[in-house]
Image (cartoon, rainbow, N blue to C red; front, top):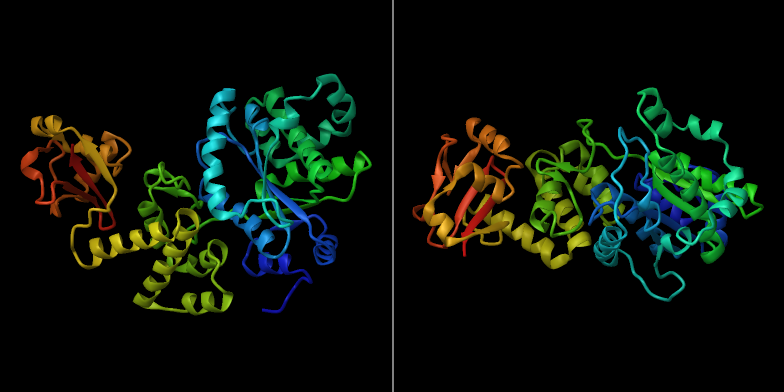
Length: 418
């Protein structure tokens, strides 16, 4: 593929499908050739983990670092107290300071596995915008920063228009979010020389606010770069599984389930996902994506293993691949399958199959479990069960001391008495 840019950084992003919009492509490209730049992505701590959609922007920070520049992961300790209203149908619930701090500590663990942090010139830096946002003087902030924002222009952003066109409330608190995010950019430039903010395409308006604010306040030229919101070939939004969001924290979404999520990638998406989510050379990706028929399954396994290795470590990735092989290919029981524990006394008394499916995470509710059973998708120890009133007792235990529950061909879990 012919190089579109002069800088390694933008060429990598372009060739791997990361670029949606750049505020000044020529200017950013020239700067990235001339000097080491600092760029950042902001993440609000509204949950205890980031999800697969966030992995795209974290990967952009990885490539920024790999091409000789410095990435900053900005934790939204301050902005999380307000909440990003972009493209939401309702107002976010306000989080306590303690909850935000707990979430940030949990999220940090994910970043440390993907980026290299330290004191070197290209080592990543983790920053919390609470360090400056919580210290602002309100009146001074309005005079020095707020006067540079046009309400008319802010109302024109798609993220705001969507709420207003639906006659849905947009609080003054949420409306201030875009001002705070714009200020973050200028503050990061002042503290760290940051010149680039990256994010999903839904963040374009918020990021451009920061670029414009720097200009209006007499600051340096800043740049915006967004990535497309990733969808599957079917049109479905990337990042959801049957049981909910695909979290990057192993306690919320197990490495095995994570591996399976990517193993089940649609055929048409294999090449695209290999480029975006793995670090494999493009030449190798082209060979894998060119495989057809049943051979494409091998490419899907490579995809699943490589992405799982990035997020959860190589050992967890290979263990997940081995578990899948034993479960689906060899027909053996692999005790590394996701396991939920129940008390021996409860099992002796009998546990309803509906409750068991929910307990092991194969259904989100009794209603969903019942639908799985009625559709013929549920098996207990590889034997079909069609009675939604069935219960499990100690007689169902396998020689390994567990009960194997399955929904469909690819979702399995174990129930273990303790």
